Length: 251
Ligand SMILES: Cc1cc2nc3c(=O)[nH]c(=O)nc-3n(C[C@H](O)[C@H](O)[C@H](O)COP(=O)(O)OP(=O)(O)OC[C@H]3O[C@@H](n4cnc5c(N)ncnc54)[C@H](O)[C@@H]3O)c2cc1C
Image (cartoon, rainbow, N blue to C red; front, side, top):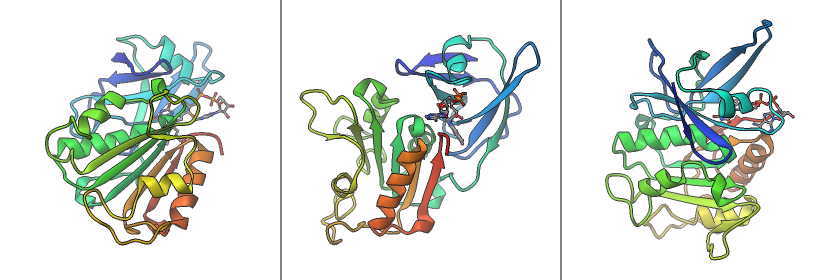
C-alpha cells in the first residue's frame, strides 16, 4: 500500500487488494481495525478509483476528534496491511451504460464516490453530459481540484471534456479574485449552476425549474448537506426516484 497526500486534511490510500472482484463507481469498502487488546473499530470509505483503474484507492478526510480517520490519514504507512471488506453498495452507483445526464453534488469528502464516477466516465471516453458542484470550506480543501480541471474547462482536451462542467463553492474563505460561487448551496446557486438547458443548449425550462427533471442525480457528503441539497433539487422538479443520496456523517 502507498499513501498520497491530497489536501492538508485528506490522504489517499492506494491499496493492493489481491483477488479484488472489481467494483462499480460509487461503491465503498469497510475497513476493520483491530488494536492489540482486541478492540475493533469499523468504518466505511468510498472507492475513489474507477473500475478501470489498476489500483484500488480510497481517500480519507481527517476528522479532528475522530477515532479511525486520524489513524488512516496520519499513521498508516506504505507497506502496512489493512483488513477490508467489499465492494459494498448498490443504488449509489453509476456506469456510463446507465446514461445521463449526470448531476453530481458533493460536500467535502463526499466528492470521493463522485470522483470515481467521473474517472470512470473519462476512462470510457464517455460524452454523457455531466455537471459537478463541490462545496468545500476553502480552496485548499478542494480535493482532486487539479485533476478535475484537467477533465473539464477550457484547458482540457479529449472526449467528454466539453460536456463536463465542474464548479466549486467556498463556504468559508474564497480567494479575493474569485468570481465563482461562495457560501452554502441554496436555491439561487442551483439555478445558476443548472441553468435552463444543458451545456451548449439554449434551454427552455422556466426559472427555478430543473432543465432536465430526469437527470441522474448523486448527492454525497455530511448528512445536513445531503438533506438540504436533495430537498432543493426535488423542489426544482427533479424526479425523487432519480436523486440518489449517500450520507457520510452521523444522522
Ligand atoms: C458509505 C460511506 C462511505 C464513506 N466514505 C468516506 C470517504 O470516502 N471518505 C471519508 O473521509 N469518509 C467517508 N465516510 C465516513 C467514514 O465512514 C467515517 O464516518 C469518518 O471517517 C469518521 O470516522 P472517525 O472514526 O474518524 O470518527 P468517529 O470517531 O466515528 O466520529 C468522531 C466525531 O465526528 C462525528 N462524525 C462522524 N463522521 C462524520 C462525518 N463524516 N462528518 C462530520 N462529522 C462526523 C461523530 O458524530 C463524532 O462526533 C463514509 C461513510 C459512509 C457511511
